[in-house]
Length: 438
Ligand code: S3P
Image 1 (cartoon, protein in one colour):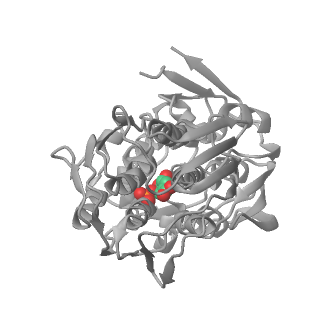
Image 2 (image 1 turned 90 degrees about the vertical axis):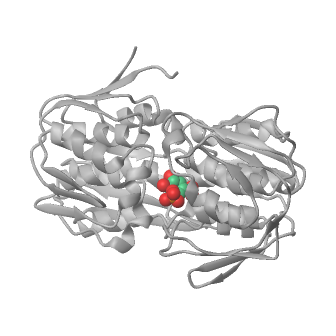
Image 3 (image 1 turned 45 degrees about the horizontal axis):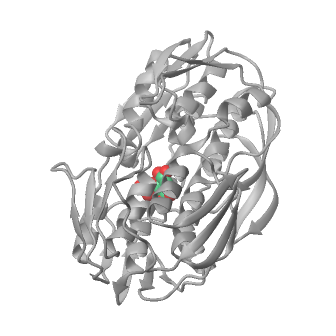
């Protein structure tokens, strides 16, 4: 059981300075997964030493992969090749990490040993049928609870066949799960997306010299090839940068530059949405590092106004809505989000939990089935509960700057899943935040 961690934020202050946010979570997971099943030694720099990515790392150690580090973001993975993983001695505990569970389900469906995947209470309530259904059609044998949740028991029989699958939800985790299963399947596995989602798996597979075919919204992979080890430089996580993008945008007098942030176009919805709301964000020093676009992001405060968030941007900003709701509460007029039902099945029900917290702070935030309608307003102080969801805890920390009285946020231990340096970095930039442990 993790400790009860509470954040307390004093109102006021400005955000100033330059900072480098930790490595991208999605790329960190994939660097371990692909490095482990590659031939040769993969060197990773900028690895996110958060609990989620570390859960993936431990899972591969448990399957016999030699992994050095992490030490200051450096990890060395001694790949065992596509068929070199070994049966772990016990269940693989993936903690809070949906990415680990969904991506590993695909990879493990193709092994010739059996595995059980477990997670914490939040992960054990998240929907897994979205991966079980297509994997079963490929020939996998997976048992879950009656509700279609973890623990998952994957009986490896080593025989999968290719599948062409039109995903009912826009999910990079499902797409990646099937591409990883496709590495082990006979023939071709194709995934068709209803809307573009993050494409790190595709970019990184190509980086490991594994061919993929892309035709519009369809990506295809043929099983039976091999991955060749490579070096990976993980850019800063735009999902972590987002807290300071919003914090600086809504706090008069702020001026923050976030260095070396990944700006893959499948992840930059937060920048587009904030710009539509009137934010001043400059994208500086654009470059490409290891196949991923990277830039420094400078944000200065400006008055924001409410918008109807275009639905096409939803998958491209899927993890940033908790903090975007805070921006909406500070933006003149009304902001409406639709087409974001997926937020209800993240680490918490992010529509309900954010609406509850914003209402506690005095904001008119009305949850809908697939989004929220938020009116700008003065935020009072108060006590909110993050429900163990890292991004909710950080979003309300940013809200605290704008409130008239202190904001107390309960249940913040899981900030360590994605952004262990959050407190230190936000203090350095000017947030007046205190942590208590009980
Ligand atoms: C992720 C994909 C997204 C995102 C998650 C990480 C990934 O989930 O919310 O934090 O690394 O592929 P979905 O693909 O389920 O939307």
